[in-house]
Amino acid sequence: MRVQHAHHRLTPALPGPQNHFAVYTRTRRRTRGAHPNLRRRRRMSSSLLPAEAHPLRARMSAAALALAVFALYSVYSWLQWRHYVVPSWDLGIFSQLAKAYASGQAPIVPIKGEGFNLLGDHFHPVTVLLTPFYWLWPAPATLLYVQNGLVALSVYLLVRFAQRILALWASLALGLAYALSFGIQQAVAVQFHEVAFALPLLIMSLGYLAMTRLADAPALLLRRAIYWAAPLVFVKEDVGITVFVIGLVALARTGWLSTASSIAFPSASAPVRPRRERYRTLLRSWVNTPAVAEASLLMLWGIVWPLLAIGLILPHFNTAGVFDYSDKLDIAAAIGDPLGAFAQLFYPWQKTATLGLLLLTGVLAWTTSPLALISVPTLIWRFLSPQEGYWEPTWHYNLVLMPIVFTALLDVLARATARTHVPAYQLGAAPAGRTVRTIFATLRHRAPVALPALALIVSLGFLPNQPLAQLTDPDFVTTELSTTDQMKAEAVAAIPEGATVAADLSVLTYLVLNHAAYWIGHSGEPGPDYVLIDKLGSAWGGNPPTSAVAYATGRYGTATYVHYRTIGSIDIAVRTR
Image (cartoon, rainbow, N blue to C red):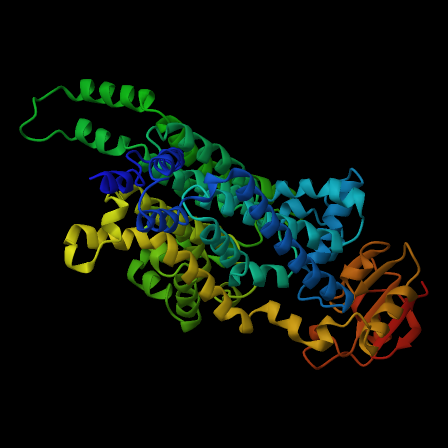
């Protein structure tokens, strides 16, 4: 009986990580002189204790993983920058924004057009946080490292939440699986975007939601989840709908909805009360139930800001007085044909492939958590859009989904932990002594071990087809500049500092720091001082202009251009009047 009693104490009587640690300490004292088999079983059980049993080791291991992730992605970003890898004009755009903010000016971005205020493009006031980093190091590459830092911070936060319920190695496995997930890698590869600021906010908010599974009084954790979700509306206009769903999930976690239902719609056997009295009771319960008011207000907050942004703020700052992306989603058509809209979520097949990749990333189990609902708004607007780039598992569009997938998986693990009330010695008993109850309990008991390992295996399995695989390419990892790299560096140096210059993607971002850089696709006045064309650049689709002079003369009105320099495949024209 002493042996059974001692092992029974390894299973916490109450949910909550603190009970794991206290019970384990008491059990260790009681079993110190026990039979060797008992001590061996105790050691095996202790290896599955939450990593928070050793707080300093837990914090240091989480920090070490985060620093390693930052270093890995920063090496990748540095190599991209070194070799003039420019996936799009977005880094140049955000670099001009950061440059303007650092100068105390409005975010006027010439790449988007003459006098274009980027606050009229997307609603992302959070990008003002780039200012101190640009002060310290005024260069477009700074934004790459800021994004990598946000990724690393989110890794640290995820691991710290996981350590409350998982063993040390399991929490690190979950964090590494997240860090190497396809959404993170693809976003780093296409360089900086404002949605990177959502990562730590989502991890904090959804992490606290997951931890409510283990709390006797979850109101405090729910409030923290709500407060961390509120700033997400300032990341981008579409994230507000995600905030609304976070508020809805938080409201459901309060347990108030069932109470409200019983008050508003009493059973037939309940005494009949006047409707007004029922509504008063409902309102009192809404006010008095912890975290209910905050969750409801978060839902309202998440709806109001997108409406303000799309209806008022963006058109106000936009040079054309409109929301530029209103044609990306036809909400009225989707409402008018719901069956067709539902089918459109899965076809063309690129959408199904992206969904399948998301399911596998969280080893399917994440979809059983209510937190999985938070991913729905992002998937709907992407897959109902006619823009094909939104459907693919590439670019940065899956970045905000990664925290949702992994915190939903963490929520599943927390649920398994909270429901496992069978003594540890029964979980390790011989099969003949097991019951249906202990079998299901065993499965729940194994989930904190199996699911993080499987998630890491999935992320590692996809690694050969993801951007980090470039680190095995000798041409990519070399620090030596290729002939093409040297050509581009010489072309950038050939443009006098302070001049206005229009260029294609090849060197556009590299001209931002010391020049007023324009995208070469714009037309009309004013004509830039220099026009730079890379005939081998991706912008031309294999059909470049015959010369920079001919292109500039036809593009920029009455301005006159002559040949300036030819450097390899790059042709440069200069304005004479």
